[in-house]
Image 1 (spheres, rainbow, N blue to C red):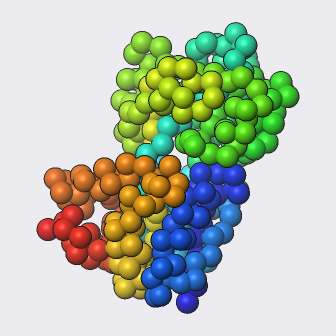
Image 2: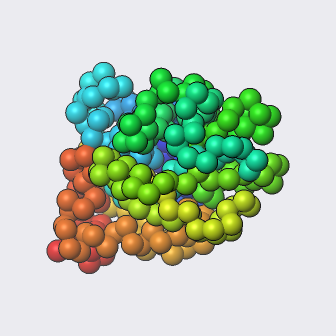
Length: 299
């Protein structure tokens, strides 16, 4: 049996994380081979693929899981999902060229902002962030480009800002070498307003030197990205996959820095129980439950 994992576009973070996950999982004979499937719409497409039995696991941002479960837009019907494991909590941020006069979110009014493909999770994140700050897409010109195309447009001066996915990612690393960049900072209470309005965000800091152009620590919001399955995947398969992930989170962080500090995402299981990972009310897969109990993370 081939284990199929839905990821993202080739240059996206989910695809690069999928590559590291493939290395870990294929060491287990019952999980090999592993096939990575690209996706232009990442979270939403992966949910639909799970529903159609086209994949066994899919990367999703935690904000999409409850919407898929409940059949809320853009999903036409409820989708049967089951949580497997958290993958990372990465910053969501806006970049502008270093020489840009844009210094704040309010400065984005009447500007051209790349927000991701029209049906992507990034667009939903952008709506949530701007909504919390009292702005909407009518206040600027949204440009629906994927990460690589958006980076090219920013470098060429065709857009004024780009909404970017968690770093490190190949697109941002390359862009930062091509042009001078600056990460847009939140002013005063803006970060708190976003955190209060969007409960699935966490506070994080983009560290100085994380990419060329970040010359000081920059507080940002982070979204928890997760690996999701569905109830029809055998319990033994999900258990083996989750056990491999839990046993290898340090190594995953060495293979791909997006997984650094991954172990911290599992710790709330000890104090909050299974609810700690049941984002959007989506239950843990029975195989994941067994894996966490075997690892001593759940009683």
